[in-house]
Length: 304
Image (cartoon, rainbow, N blue to C red):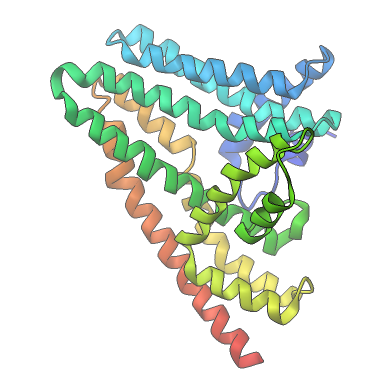
C-alpha cells in the first residue's frame, strides 16, 4: 500500500473527511503515530503531550508580538497532529482505553479555553469586562454547541452509511442506563464519572435535534437494527451535502480565522466570527437536517 492508501485506511470516511484533512491533518498524524509506535509510547502519553502543547499556545496568543503569535500557531498545529496521532496509534497497537477516550475528548476544550483566556487577557486593558462577556458567550455557548452538533451529525451520517463499525452514535438513554448500572466501587468509579459528563453531552446533542429524535425513535420501533439498505442510502444522500458544513463548524476553518485575526493584529475577530458567522452556519445546518428528518418520518409513517 502507498502512504496515501495507508492514511486513508485510518480515516472514518471520505464522506466526512476531505482532501484537507487527508493531507494537512491525517498524513502528518499518521507519520507521528508510526514514530511513537517505534518508540513504544502509549497513546495516552501522546494525548497528554497534545494537551500541554495546545494549551501552551494560549500564552503565545496573549502577546502582541507577532513572532510570539507565530510560535503559538505552530504549537496549535503541532498539538492537532498529535491529537490525530493518538487515535491512529491506539488503533495500530490495539491500546484503546476509556481514559484515552476521555482525555481525547477534553483536549480540544482545554486548548480553546486557554486560547480564549489568552485573547481575553490581551484585550482586557482596552475592552474591560466586555471582552470577558463576549468570549464567554462565544466560547462556552456558541463554540460548545457548534462543535457538539457537528460531531453529532457526522456520527449520524456514519451510522446510516456504515452502521456501528465506523460511528460513535450514542444516545442519552443508552449512556444513562450504563451510568445507573455502575456503582462508585473500585473498578467502576472512573467509568461512572466519565459517563456522568458524557451522558450530559449526548443530552445536549439530542436537545438540539428534536425532529431527528422523533424520526430515530420511530425508525428503531419499526425496523429495530435491521434498517433497509435503501433507507440508509437515501438518508446518506440527503446528509452528504451537509458534511462540508459540519467541517466548517469544527477545527480547521475556526483555527484559520484565529490565525488570520492574530496576523492582522485584531484577535477580537475570532470570537466575533464564532458568533456572527458560525452560529448562522449551525442554525442553517440544523434547519436543513431537521427538515429532511421530518420528510423521512412522514415517509416512514405512510409506509406503515
